[in-house]
Image 1 (tube, helix red, strand yellow):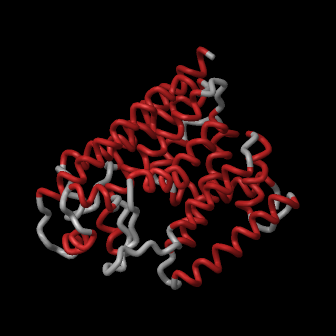
Image 2: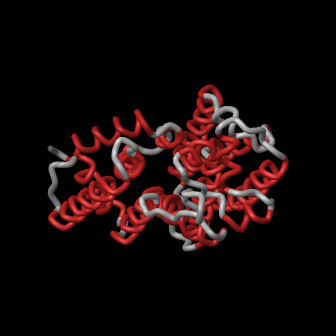
Length: 301
């Protein structure tokens, strides 16, 4: 398979699965869009293995380990029958993406396969916000650090800002997915925050099954949302630090994800009665604004 064919496979995966991310990919120059699609396809495969409930966790660990070993072999040898690995190898070379970042990304994904039971509950939890931050760093901030290498930057301040932007995005995802995650026996809201509001992990499970949403849980989710808003400031500061031809893509991502958080706020933390999302029309409007921004940036650069 040629590199061009491998990228075509990754673009198809991104177009089918990426949802919010793909809107941002659309306003990038072709070579950067290809790179983003390769990285996304790699992440998607790792997430699919970790979340495949058709397999017990023990089997998922085995499948994940084999997949990681295949990727490492492809990276070392420079050849692979897997189109995602072919495209990713080319992206790494083209944009100087260090192996260590992708290894951290895999480490983050495999954390979901490591049981962290709260005694007596069987639910996976984090003890503190620092523990949650580390998880968010591995599954989201690392993505941001990879993305800015594709976007292009010269100011080292961009790296910390990309890290914090990833935290904002992942906290938003965690808020949106509280119900789905607790049904999978995962609670990402850390125990110290739960305890501060007098909420037990089992309370979230009861609400997911239909119990009323009480003021303590609403207050806790509002507080986690406020934490996310503070990190969104980093996204705004990051935009002017990356190459002009990529600023619109980051702008689109920040607008879509922050728009999702606004909708969660508008529901006063109710992420249980229905899944909160940004409507397609709103995303299209953001994409149109991003496309106009990308055109202006290319004309003046």
